[in-house]
Image 1 (cartoon, rainbow, N blue to C red):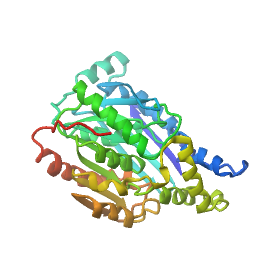
Image 2 (cartoon, helix red, strand yellow; image 1 turned 135 degrees about the vertical axis):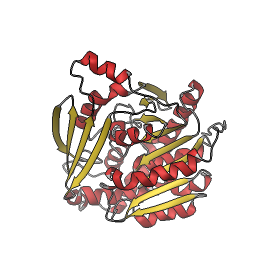
Image 3 (spheres, one colour; image 1 turned 60 degrees about the horizontal axis):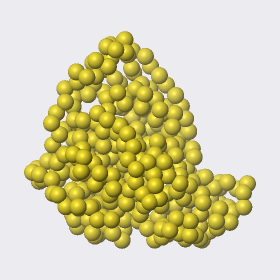
Length: 367
């Protein structure tokens, strides 16, 4: 799939095209498909498949951030890139369109006409900000950066949420030598939340919105951390061992013909020797009953990666859940269909965050 991004910035239109999901869990058939080789590929840090797009978005929009930096987590040690966006009326609009299920077009409009950089920065400082009523953490999908969540960030900021965007371990601008698809990453987030809470960055009740990989990690984090008062899980997987074969079949059909599900299982199982984490049995399905906060589940009717039946099963095992299956959407299109799902998310947040929690609960996270 191709992606095209157009940024209208000071009357200048910038466009680029890159392959979508171009470097995610690639199984190189030129090498020997040993169990160890497959295991190394599975846990390999994915980086940022949208690196060119992320850089352009960062250059154009990071001046709007209230702060950005890195938080050290571990063991094993990693530095997670974090950016904070305060609530406010931002002169920015996103429009996304998936053309023929092949090309994703992202249009970003920055409605500031000041041409000199000094005037532009002055205009940014004059933006009207609100007092935050609550805080939300955004977690991107596998192999994507926090910049892929900017469309949600500005929508949420306009609704008086303080927004915290995080590059997960081994993704975007964050470091990390391997990934575990949830167990280690959720431990990272427990540490990040505890640090941000102590610093006073988190204000009011805390919610997490995650997409795909990020959604599953959000659920595992909520199971460990009572501070999390609401979760929006967009197309989460329930179990690692079932989602990886589907992912390979969907995005690498030629390569996946040469590797069996049993080989993938053996690779995932062997990864425990490399990471110390039992990845083959990991996933939110076994811990979801520990989440007592409300959860909104969203999945596309045509999703072949995180099947609607499995997402529905997660919802049924949840203590307090709403399940929404969106017609004519798949795993790629749904997160970008904000014109469809944002009204659902917005109204759900009003009921489950705005109108329920008058003040944040001070419970500590549990690792």
